[in-house]
Each structure stands twice: as C-alpha cells, then as structure tokens.
Amino acid sequence: MKGIVFTEFLDLVEDKFGLEVLDKIITQSNLESGGVYTSVGTYSFSEMLQLLQQLSAHTNISIDDLLLVYAEHFFGVIEESYPGLLATYKDPIEMLSSIENHIHVEVRKIYPDAELPTFEIVEKTQDSLVLIYKSSRAMHHFGLGLMNKTFEHFNSTASIVLEKLNNEGTEVKFVINKN
Ligand code: HEM
Image (cartoon, rainbow, N blue to C red; front, side, top):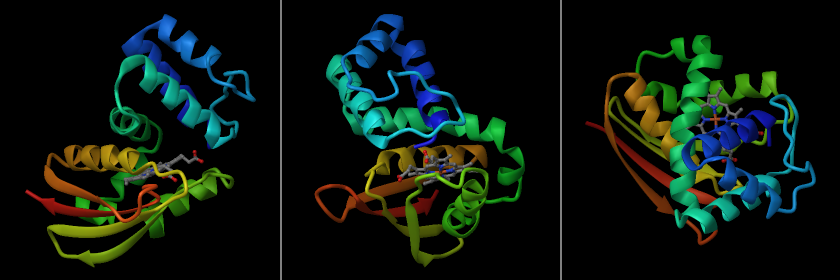
C-alpha cells in the first residue's frame, strides 16, 4: 500500500482524535515501519489494517465507518494532486465506470507497485451503474466514500447500495442510481 494512504490517514487521525490517540494506535500496533511513512514509499497493507483495528477499538467506530470518512478526506487529496485526471470527466457515472480502464491505469503508471482493486461493469445506463468490486483488502467502504465524493464533485447526488457477495467483503456489488 502506498505511503500517501498512510500519511493522509495519520494526519486525519491526529486532526479528528488528537495526538494522544495517534500515538496510542501506533505504539499498540506491531508495525514493521515503526509508524514512520513517506508519501512515496510502499508499506504492507497489514500495517493499515492494524492501525484501523486499533483506532476502531479506541473510538468505538466500525472499521467500515472509519474507511468511509477516510475516503471522503482522501478524495480531497485526489482533487488537489490529480486535477487533470478528474477534469477528463463531466459526469459522475462516466467517471465511476472508468476507474478500471482509465483512472487506475493512470495510477499504476505513477505507482507501478500500487495495490488496486478491480471494478467490473455489470450494467450501465446514463443514470445508473452496477459495479462488482474485487480486492483481497476488502476496502469497499473506502470505495463507497470515494463514490459519494465523486457525485458531490459534479454537484450531484446518488443512492448507492452495497451488497457483500461474500463474508470477507472481498467481492461486493455496488448499485448506483443518480438522483
Ligand atoms: C486505491 C488513486 C479514484 C477506488 C487507490 C490508491 C491510489 C488510488 C493511489 C492506493 C493504492 C495503494 O495503496 O497501493 C486514485 C486516483 C483516483 C482514484 C488518483 C482518481 C483520479 C477512485 C475512485 C474509486 C476508487 C473514483 C471509487 C470506487 C479505490 C479503492 C482503493 C483504491 C476501493 C483501495 C484499494 C483496494 O480496495 O484494494 N486509488 N483512485 N479510486 N481506489 Fe482509487
């Protein structure tokens, strides 16, 4: 997992929960990196999982809800860092149906070792989209947060229903209907 995902996450934790909680979740995790990340480095996903588990235990907020809020913050990072990529799109459905064949393809050019999910398009109309998310990392709520913000970015809203296709959440169906 790319360092930028860690540095932004820890910034948000400090911002929302304070330095004491940040310090606790780092010291109570068993981190190969020692909790020191650079935005261009690459670190084990298990470090992110431990940080999320510790934060969830300290705050009583579920990992899914933490990932949702974190993704909404991360979209702002994307808007700032990759404005050109977003400017390619005029419509949220077009953008979300292009994660697999364009957006993450470009991400992979920037970070060859990025660990990305796949999004298969099952059905697409002008105002609706059905996607199947697959990833061993089960970060579906990170995807949900990015989708919410994608609609907001285009001054639009949608109903997004998420259906887990297995217990682990490594395969998830998203049914998206623009309002
Ligand atoms: C992961 C970039 C749009 C879904 C990532 C990562 C980056 C990235 C850097 C982390 C890779 C790693 O740590 O190794 C971008 C950029 C985007 C974009 C620059 C737009 C310009 C989206 C959108 C979605 C999405 C719109 C909506 C669903 C995800 C998910 C992950 C991810 C769910 C977590 C990894 C996983 O589930 O396996 N993306 N992304 N991305 N991205 Fe994107």
